Length: 114
Length: 108
Image (cartoon, rainbow over all chains, first blue to last red; front, top):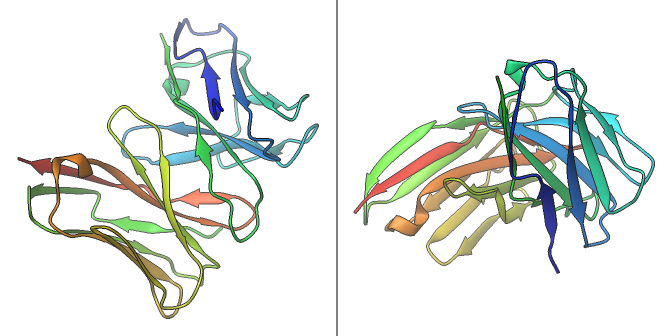
């Protein structure tokens, strides 16, 4: 099993450009999440999904959109990139939101917006 | 909403010294999870605690959940260079909320 994979691993954008980050998991998990990590600020939840076809806003959703058309995939879109979106983006998945919901993280995407 | 505060933010130790990081909340938590992130890597789940006063051990790591379920700690005995990384606590409600992490460096 590959676990959670993310593409691309690195990307440089110019301000105003758009892009989509792809997350895929092969563990049949219902729940998927997108986080961003900035120095000294820990992990902040952008959007999450509790199942195929569902999405919900997290802590810092502005400037991002997501889609979960297939259970195994969770896409994060930036419509008009800004320098403030320079960050490392992690996707994660979990079996449930219940009492035991270990999150499995992907390797991350390092995004720079110039 | 609920938040957790982690202290210290940074900790530098000599190899062989002990290390402790604390996770504190102003409200009662249903559970606490701990993750480790190596430099340049991604967070990896270590453990979950759910019971008041619970103590769990993994080799040199000891995890505790407070009696009031408002705080938790991770203690590493006799640190090694392989312990380097950032340790995060988190709790799950409708979603997992993380503390800001404690970055541990170990001098050989």
